Length: 276
Image 1 (cartoon, rainbow, N blue to C red):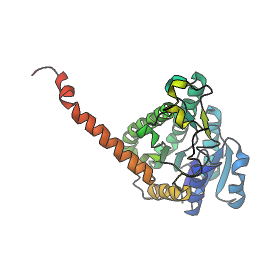
Image 2: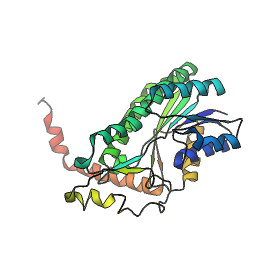
Image 3: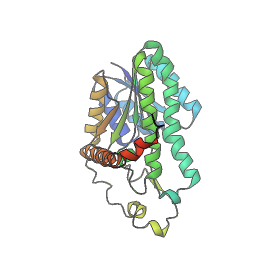
Image 4: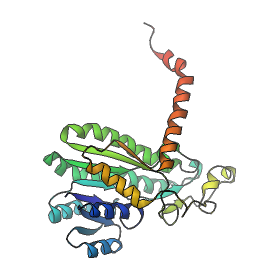
């Protein structure tokens, strides 16, 4: 049995992660901005769930949540950074305040929780950190430049973190889900307030008023959560875990396209060293 601290458990994948961890016999610190949204998990599993209010943009709440988790269960073995939301805008359309909030929640929030749990994990020489990304970081669709950018930043951070923590017995994993049937493309999706007409046929096609994907996504949150718990419980979680056929297909297509472009320009790339 281990203790999982999961952010953003009110709905969607975060809720599914909490339920799957519980089903595998783990204790869960289930967090959401409103603790009432996860109280039902605690009511059903009073010995194994600690419900907490947690806004990952609040330093005091982050440190307080980790303290409460340690007081209740002794330590945090697995951190799952899941809290977040979508934001769609052409790059030119993106509002400065909205972009800052996006990065503060996804990237800075991830860093806050990592820093809060690492002292305990390092002292025990064990633990697992899981950071949620998106296949969007790889395929970067029109209208998702800012969201793709923040997830790509999380992926780069996680790869460095993995190398730093490996000698200390702590793993770091990034998860790239494809489309899952959650509220992500519905209630949780935000977008720029004022579209620019010139982007109507690119970023504009993916605005909420034109998007028909919500409710038809292929991914089953329960299966995605089961896959994550299986990977973490294996004792050798990968750097990157893709979730969904669309994620696997999109990742491979993006790699193939990038490899082809690298090959095309390789001679020029190799021409920039000093002559021997």
